[in-house]
Length: 338
Image (cartoon, rainbow, N blue to C red; front, side, top):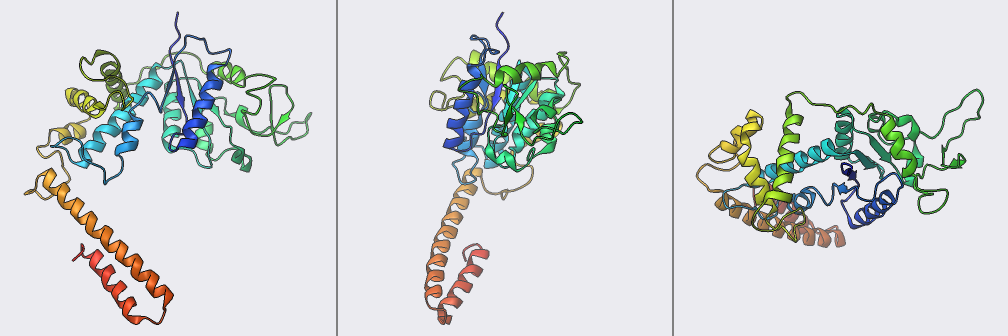
């Protein structure tokens, strides 16, 4: 019987993190505790994260002629969260690669959600900056039942205090948990996976009616459509193979508005899809977007002039004329470029 997939969370905000995450995915795949036919789903490859990362900038093109940027990001963020929650709910276990100086807040939230669903969580850190302390976020660490296994050792009556975690050979090892992965004594996931599974009682948790329960249901439906039942165009989460992913999210979310919280239903059913009146009522979204783009151009040109004048003033601190020009330009930007 094929096991449920593993859901792997690794930092993916730049190329270095993406490559590092793929290396860790290989470590995970090579563990003797991961069956060869068990799938590994990742936050980077198997959610709408790529769509969000390309469209999150406020200046990006707005998809859909009737959409505002507000609507577009609402659809993408709701889809990203729903799919992530569905992945957690259906996973055999979750692996959170907790690298970096500061935890990724979204991964911390998903790790906590996984624990609430009684899912085993492997919290893995292979970042030498962790030597600065036992953790950069005690709340994330503490949300995993066996979190004491990730601490660097503790003094006992029989044992002298050691500031380092023990490796698989039970010798002192600096808090660099992947240090021995590619070479003897073995793959660290061989120990961490059974440990994580043993720390929960194994009973599936069914959430009462709540926003998170709604997200899981919506995520199930989004995944089924994008990966399975869609009949035309590309499938999946890769934008190069499925450039219409946004419309897939839009279609399924609008088809399932009935399960959404009332405030989200009202937002999507609003005639202007803009309950906060961010755009003047006499302008269409396209006209407003055009005005915003022209205003951005004015601000950009003004900023270039500002930088040029500032450089000139720094070269000649006695140039009161240039200083006055800079002051006037700043006032102009503050007044909308007038």
